[in-house]
Length: 194
Image 1 (spheres, rainbow, N blue to C red):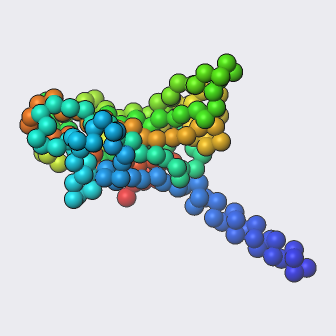
Image 2 (cartoon, rainbow, N blue to C red):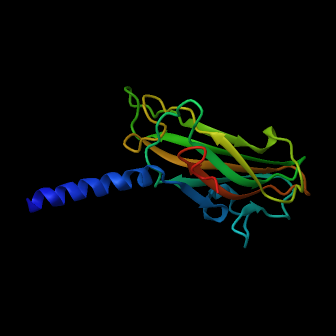
Image 3 (cartoon, rainbow, N blue to C red):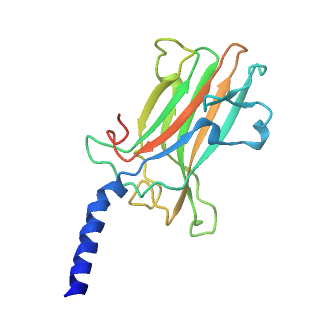
């Protein structure tokens, strides 16, 4: 009888924690990214937690990657809700741009042994939304994660894919000042709302 009671209590405890585990959120500060080797001389990790291009650089593209290793497998979105890619970024207008993408990399080659192409699961592009307010301030952007990796039934499936966030900060004029404060992946639209 004691073993049955322990088993029932264990099962109830596991089920009680299941919704909490499925609502796991992945987040990263701008300063925690891995700067592309070719861009080591142009990046600036700021004391605010953000990353930007050094003010002395007049024109460049900074490539940064954020490994996504702790996100649970995400299901295909249901109508009216979707997992989201969210960022806080700064786009100071003409001459500045920030593009952030969630990427899936197949762990296994195709049937011929060739590497499979990267898959973009969601994209945020600061040039797709008109700037409002103070251009020197960070603003929130969000996009649905809605593309399936090839051959997968899930948006994220760590048995077959590795994931990372790829960010590009582009500056084409001396006065432009693009920046990236944070990146977040939410299992649903309201999971990350305050």
